[in-house]
Length: 284
Image (cartoon, rainbow, N blue to C red):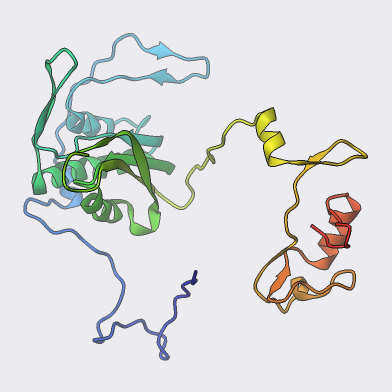
C-alpha cells in the first residue's frame, strides 16, 4: 500500500499537465439554480402552531411540525432559539425514484416524483436553510441512495464547504434489491456526513463492553495479579532518526522499524508493569 504525499512544482505552484491551475471549488450547474441570498430572502414563511409541548427534565421541549418543511424552515430562520443553535440534523428525503409509495394497507403514503434538476434544487435550497440553523459545532447527515447521492455530494461541498465533508457512510440494506436483474444486487444506501465548521461535536460510536468480549480480546492472564492482557508490538513500520529510532536497553528497533515510544517512555511503562517480556527477552 502506498501513501500519497502532495507535492508542488519546483516554483511552488500546483499545475496540471496542460498548465491550468489545479484546485478550486467544483460547482454543479443546472437550470433553475438560485443563489444563496435569494433563497434566504425569498423563502416562504409558515404559520406555526404547537400542540401541548412535551417538557423534559433538562429544560428542553420537543417540537413537532406537520407540513411542507421548506416554509417551516423559513419560519425557523426567524426564531432566535433555533437559528444557529441546532447541534444535529438528520434527514431522509425522497430518493428521486419517480414512484408513488404505498403503505402496507395499500394506501398512498407519499409521492417521489421530482427528479433531475428540480430534485437537486429542491433539496439544495432546504440544505441552505438547514445550514443557517446549525450551530458552529453542529453536524448534518443526509440519507440518499445511488440515484442522487453523488450529485448531492457536489452540492453539499458547495453549501457546507468541501473542507467540512467528514464521511460518505455506506449503509448495508437488510435485503438485496433487484437481484433478478442482469446486474449486481442493490445492497447499499449512502449517508453524507458534513459539519458546519472544524469545531464540531464528535462522540465516537462504541459497542458496550462485555465479559465474553473481554476474554476474547485479552487472552492472557498475569499469574501474579490475575490481570488479563494482550500482547501488542512495541515497534511500528518506518525508520526514524529521532528518539524512537534509538536503542532501548541495548536493543535497537527491528530493521526497517522504530519504537512506538521514546526509550524514556518505554522505561516508565516497564516500571508500571505494562511491558511483557517473552522467554527470549523480547518486549511487547
